[in-house]
Image (cartoon, rainbow, N blue to C red):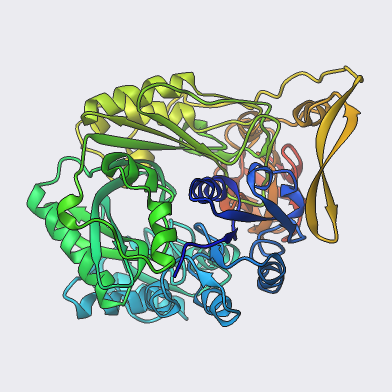
Length: 587
């Protein structure tokens, strides 16, 4: 089989940009898809062609199977790259693509089915002698199952999405009285992000490291490990900083992890790029899950191996054998990736901060790379993941990489939205991180983030009304074209900034964290997914009042005073903006 002629990228943001660039380097044409909110997104601007999905939310657009299949046929694409998230681990979608004669650039549907269901994945791993932490192979259908499991194995218990990963749909239950709320929240998040709400459970390790192995398998029987990554710096079970190789672990243990990962991949008939994840604690490692897709953190593996993983995905999917062997793989130096998210660290609360990016200036220099799906003037929507970009650095050793990462962070300029940059810097400069003493719960439980905040800073509007010649996107029958025309000389960012300024996440959240007014407002734009109180209820400061979902993350909005609920201004399903009144409390 020859290399693809045209690849449709069934995704958005930085991963769509990453795939489009790899295709361009190989001489492969690309097709972008976009929601109503992404009409002029960077991935759309870079692709050779672009087609409208319609809708705003992920369910209405990037998860619209029928429309996606229509566009694949209409565009004439002979390959589809799913990126990560959305359809990347959807066996039905992969199978549907094959049925219309188009190649899915990923593993076969059968491997996705085995590993996409985390319960069958545990069973498959056990069949090849790779074992995880104590857990169940049954879906949770009744809270009593969790109560019985906790009584037998101890608390805390991790409730996890059966069809997903990346920390989405995962809730840690510390005690029996929190079981029902955790089940409801895990199911909501799983359904919103993966389209399925099945959940299961396993014992939650107290202070583990999160270590994963990158595997690459071709269709000719070769499966290789490309080394390890450590992803232990997390908040809300989602990664903030990743590095390769995993530091401070004995070489023989890393080798054993690599072989276990290969065994798991071969055991399920895996091909293409994938990641096998483990938890490591006290000299032992436990199988966690296999992600049947490209990982967000794949650049650190590329930096230490010199292997372009997206290129390899395309070559493997086109039928080529791997052009290198295990003996050819050399891990050189150390790499660190920092996920820059549109969130105010808010002293550890990590509050989403959607809105327009008024300025984005990426750092540069030796061993420095910035992967992003945005430029100045683009907007971070509440309906999608809040990843702005990934700052990646390489150094000859870990200390050098850390110093380079801090320097690059100091050069990175992002204005208009709050970001995690201050928290990232706090992690990288912490003694525990430098000494490999951190774990998956270290950021939330131990790291001192007192005073660590980020404030959105929209630019002043530009009042110049002169006309300039610009290329403007025009949509005709669902297909995007670029048309040159004369338009007002006012950038998107300026137009957005000209609107009434919203309260930033950091300032708005103060009303729910100690302002003591009794007027509880939304700290950010989002959707109400749960109302926990009724008028007349008695509450104490700190009690959860409503649950607000923003950027695929649930946030409990709490009472700021003791008192009685006087009024509730929202209902489940309502969309709210930063500063909108949610609940009034009479002290």
